[in-house]
Amino acid sequence: MVAPSNEKKPRFAVLGAGHGGLAMAGHLAIMGFEVRLFNRHENRLWGVKGTGGIEVEGEVEGFGRLMCATTDMEEALDGVDVLMVVVPAIGHRYMAEACAPYLRDGQIVVLHPGRTFGALEFKQVLAEKETKADVIVAEAQSFIYASRAIGPGQSYIFRIKNSIPVASVRAHLIPEVLRRLRQPYPQFVPGDNIFKTSFENIGSVFHPTLCVLNSGWIEDISEFQFYVDGVTPSVAKVLEAIDSERVTVAEALGIRALTAREWLYLAYSAAGKDLYQAMRANPGYRGIMAPTTLRMRYVSEDVPASLVPIASVGRKFGVPTPTIDGIIRLASSLNEVDYWAEGRTVERLGIADLSLRELRLLAIGEQPSLPVRPEARETKESV
Image (cartoon, rainbow, N blue to C red):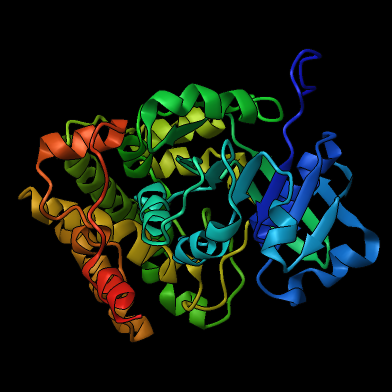
């Protein structure tokens, strides 16, 4: 999509050079936008630096030449308008801490995706760092690409989703976020508020459960298509139970969250009489192979940053989430990690004591601020 002649093209920083970051940076550059790519470590940048850009194949074909690829956050953010954060949700806190000293008024930060309460956590970190810059922090409901890195500086895009809701911490600024994002991406649409985008995090339904229920096959190092071969009618029933609990917790906040089936239709035009058929009908899932280990982001990210906050809000409002709780426990046992202890609970997010009214006001930006987490306050006072 070409930017309107009367509208200045935004300049982008893509933060993260994994599967998603390479696809986004390469595609943005192919579309004619100025792009700076940041990654915490050099090992994912050498291929990009060697060629000066990213080779993209699949639904998008071409070579996207970048302005720079760097491990220096100050260089990455210099002169950019929009920061596209494309890292696992467990990296959101790091990115917020790394960005804080270099942010300037008017910049927009978008988490792709926020998972559950990503924008809330990012904004909380900026407050802890006493960031003075007036920036908009937003999150996408889902990642716009189904993609994989296929080599150093090479990305394959299987599919670009049809429709992705986006919301900002101050909901009245959503139109400003969309004004910038829709120049390259007409697929982005208003997401009402950050609680709606958080609870419509469909990765929470699919990723951890498919890994846990296919753990034997994954550890046997059998190659199989994750969303096709890994989903049987019985597995789909568990996915539907997870989905139902997610939707019910959202209702406790007065939010009508899309079901997974509705989301599949909106994002991929995939339909079916049940979730099993809808997933089978999605051509965008074909060719995406399963992980070969359980120590990867579908578990280490989506359990603490997706399932834990949903279950935690459920506990706060008296909504039982037995299936979600079971997957959290099984994932914790499989990886020998207490995901509940390290996850985004309402206590760690600083919203445990907020009433429903206060939470709704927070979602639209009328709640003044989040309380500083006790551990953050203790660290600051000890300096």
